Image (tube, rainbow, N blue to C red; front, side):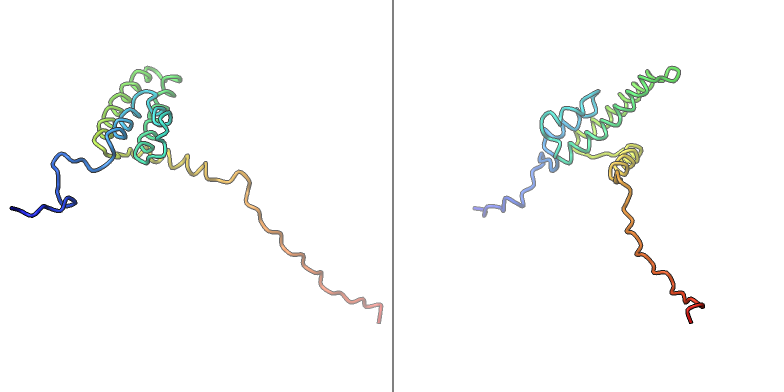
Length: 142
């Protein structure tokens, strides 16, 4: 009879190491139009995986919405088409458990973060100590 194997060393073929299925579905839903709101409604905004996809979904949706509201030529239909293509791709990647980051979204979020971290009040410069006037001698007092 064989000795039992250490259960921590057993590798299952169907085991997925990464975010849970619920988080992967929420990451996928974040790329649907307006779907970035769902993780906040479910109180999962503290999960790094869900938050990552919520941020990207929000930026993509916001840009598509801005182009739809203020169209330039026939750009609103094209923007929606691009949103659906990129959103579908990123939803698929989210469901696979990947954090596939778009470079342009990263730069936009970086700029927003920099602006939010700037202090509202200009930095306080400490006052310089007063300098004593040089001593003067009165020639007439001698």
